[in-house]
Length: 83
Image (cartoon, rainbow, N blue to C red):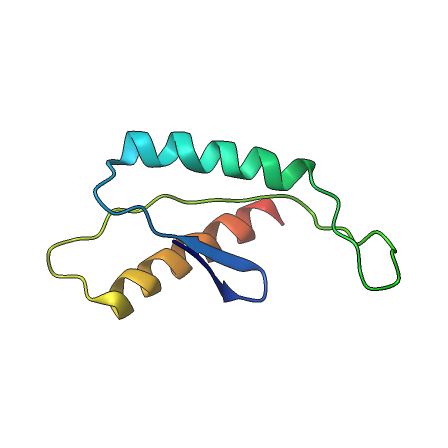
């Protein structure tokens, strides 16, 4: 399942998938997204700086809030390094 999490973030849930498989799937998705040129309603090309992604496994003590917080923090750290 994929959904928008924030303005520039999407989450792809891959239940019953280990991290090796998840990395392979997300690498393919990231390549497709990076090669896509988004357009607005006036057929003008919109840009984005790149695709950053992170795979994270849930912990036994995670609920949906703690997992999303850990994932968001990790993405914030990646974004800060790329800036």
